[in-house]
Amino acid sequence: MLENIHSPRDLDKLSYDQLDQLAREIREVMVTTVSENGGHLASNLGVVELTLALHRVFHMPEDKIVFDVGHQSYVHKLITGRYEQFSTLRTYGGISGFPKRCESEYDCFETGHASTAISAALGLARARDFRKEKYQVLAVVGDGALTGGMCYEALNDAGNSQTRMIVILNDNEMSIAPNVGALSNYLTQLRISCGWQSAKSRIRHLRRIPLIGRPLYRMIHGTKQLLRTAVVRDTGNGFFEALGFEYFGPINGHDLASMEKAFKQAAKTRVPCVLHVLTKKGYGYHQAEDRPEAFHGTPPFYIETGDRIAVPKKPSWGHVMADTLARMCETDARIVALTAAMKLGTGLDHFAERYPGRLIDVGIAEEHAATMAAGLAAGGMRPYFAVYSSFYQRCYDQMIHDVAMQHLPVVFLLDRSGIGGEDGQTHHGLFDFAATLPVPGMTVLAPSCSRELVSMLEWTLKQDGPCVIRYAKSGDELSKIDFSGPFTPGKWEIINEKADTMLFAVGSMVPRALKVCDLLAEKGIPACVVNCSTVKPLDTAFLDSLDGNHSIFTLEEHMLTGGFGLYLTKYCMEHPIPVPRKCFGVEDGFIQHGNHELLMKDAGLDEEQIAETIARIMKEEQLTWLTR
Image (cartoon, rainbow, N blue to C red; front, top):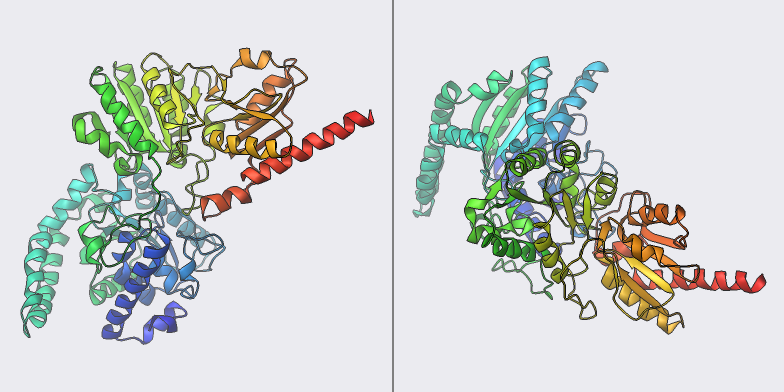
């Protein structure tokens, strides 16, 4: 049936029984594809009926739908003409795991970070009103996103202006992990007030009774729907109505008929409204239902068991970080770890096993986390904020205004730095040097291996200013990187045999630079690697020791503009030091999604590409010298 759905209008012809069959097919396709490619599974399994109902009631692309975060848009892609391409999901050159305007006219706005959809939808709604147009604007927002302050700014603005728009609150009781905060507790009370949780678990068992089970379940379930609406409309909608929104719900997010009725009612309103829809993350695939956190973002897995397909395991630097922090806690009671709803992703679940009372999860609120960390530091604590590099971008002002200007000892631990892989441009960590190097008093570190990361963390307790430590998700523990410690800030070292051709490498590019040296040796060009683990401050003593006989090349997995290479070049230009012959990094442009090594090759950062370029430059310079 799914292969015959070429646009949402093909759904209009289907009966509810056919839609149930289509929903099962969609789940099968998503489970099969994600089991092979990896991706966000649990969130998409939970919104199948919700997405079908939206597309049957509203008329996209004329009407506009914005998915918050966007990792629940697989169903939307499947029914908007991308079924044939769906097997390429998240692969190099294939379709993205997030909404992409260049992919389809049905993707009206691109998302990849949380809590942005209501603001974007309000902008679309205001554009509609300015242009005297009539279409509907919808924002599909998970309850986890409502832990982010941007949602409240948008809700407050929309409610105050009474701009007509619809917010679909997809309430599955968790974002990536179980939600935290007062709003999560409030939504729990809404669910309890309608008897949803208690009745749901009891009524489900009725379906197991032969012959009469399923009809009885449907009858009782329908009665419960009426009761829920009657109770909650009177008792549960104060929060949203206080903001100027009309409230509908809670509604069973796996009941197509109930949702369509509610959506049609919402479409008639002339004021902003919230539809509170209850879904189950992982619905329809019991492995994901039982372990929704494991199947939020998953690598390839075996469908029958849900077990991940074994691949050569690289060490998780997040776990190394968390284990080290936990060990440091044994002797320092000031240490506290912070996360913005990413305990599992950053590895801090390891820390929480030993020191649960010293881990603070603020929800999807990086700005708040940064300023609260400043307050903790001002109060005598030693805060360590673990956050993805791409999400760190969200607390830029707080990092400068609240942390750096007061020279407070907050340590930002930037996970997933560099080219991120299959999640694509919204998740690549390529801008953190540009954000941190210009900030006065900021120490910026990039370990070459996990042992150096451990030593850096231990050092942070000895300093009293702001610090950033930038590292990838995982890395090869190459024996060639012989780091024995202890880490000395502002001190670089040559980690192989000294040569006049020098590769100044940072972080993840250090092991890659060692491979480049091997390739250059085959071409008759001896070269050495300088581990520039302290990106700021520069090792000026090392630099001042160089002369005109040295050829310098810089290597970084970061944008060239604002990066380490240009930062180093500025110092060289102002002193009698040879300027780098070439800086290797990411040129001006956003990187697509796909396999990490393929993306590195696209960026010109493959070992063979770097070696060929260096050899060509050296040859051209030699010919120029001979000509002279």
